[in-house]
Length: 323
Image (cartoon, rainbow, N blue to C red; front, side):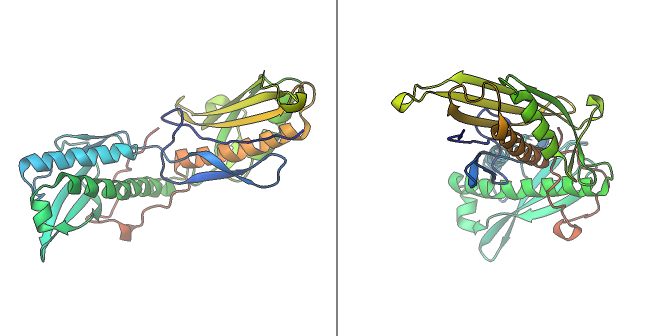
């Protein structure tokens, strides 16, 4: 039995595309002993809400300042950080902006402020000439926003990682507890073979099978579909195997999916799955580990004190990145 093609993809906010912050995952092709490329991209969850006040020290007109704030919000949304334009209010996370002028150059400055009003980090954006900036050139302002948003997002993730590192109960300091609901839909002994190999492969120092659902950080289930495919050439029909692993967090929110798509000789899996089932379980475990790591942010490097700005002491845990 030889699988013609293997595809791993992680699906999050949309059906086909995941947040493009940390690159692609690579997994092996079954039976071909060589590396394949993931079809999706993974990332940590975004903030629940980030307020972007219209800047009052932007060296722009009121109209252009409002447009710049909208551009920044859109750029943050493109990073899957839910942001809105609004006034600064107590209890909100804020992205404050201003501009500094020196020697004919304007440099935008971004400050991340926590709900207690502490400035946790300061970053500078793309510089521009005073002439272009003062004109409120819309293409320029949009470009500044688009180049600054990934930097701001990285800081938010680093702040969350710092809190996780200090918390002995976070997934930076313990294994993720995974409740496995099993495999359904496979013909023959597929459900058993796939499930057994998955349990063996998922267990490591960062992930552990949990027998009690209410004690789990993540819940995983797998559904298998085998349907008749094309007749094939020279009278060699195939069947299409579609395997979907769904990962949800303890609150029931989907963390991601791992999808395995294969064409196999027709009815070759009716009774025994053998090496095919072993490969499916192994590769799915690798993909699910990536989903959990990126969803939880456990592999993100904490923002160091030297990387911050203003008051560099985290007096309140940032809950921007929520599930």
